[in-house]
Amino acid sequence: MQKITWEINESFIFPETYGCPVKASEVHVTPRWEQQVDDLSVSLLGIYHLSAFLEFDAGKERAKQLSNECTLIDEVEWQDKLGYFEYAIPLDVSLPKDNVVHSSVQLNARDINVKLDDDGVCHIKCHVDCLYDEEQDKTQKVEQPHESNVLLMHSEAAEDAEKGESILNDFLWDLDEQYTRVEIPLNKIR
Image 1 (cartoon, helix red, strand yellow):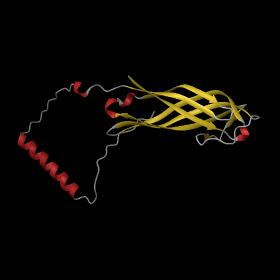
Image 2: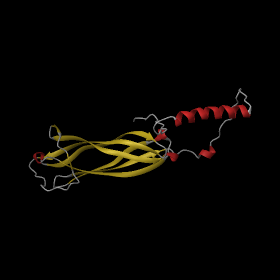
Image 3: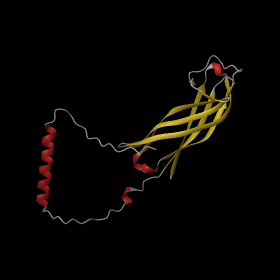
Image 4: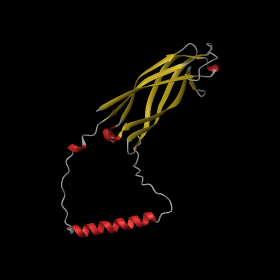
């Protein structure tokens, strides 16, 4: 099993009326994705679903001037003194198609770290592990020979192939616009 790891860093700010977050009770980051396979890669597209319970101090003012790197969370649900919010971080990862067994891909968030600044900014950082099985070398695969009960003379098979190919070529040349052949695999949703 192969492993690739990357880091996610997000910063959040809340409306001034809430005050400043002073304590993080519970934070979860859950990857949700679907796979898309093209000629070159296996793409994982989706979101990292972030959910958090924070304790706020309404008497503590947050800084007025904030950097543009913070995301404003203006919808917070309250449960007792804890504020709950959710956020979706875009997920877009490409893995080399030749190396990956498509059904084996797993994403796991770990080491979630929350830092609450005095200016009211909540920084959330975590690591994401991508685990997948590598395909075995294609030259090592052994194909079983199969027998056919249909015997065609070489000249008959060549004539049939040329005839079918010429019908297809005639059809394609009669088209008014260009065409492109596209194979669309069914996506596996996790």
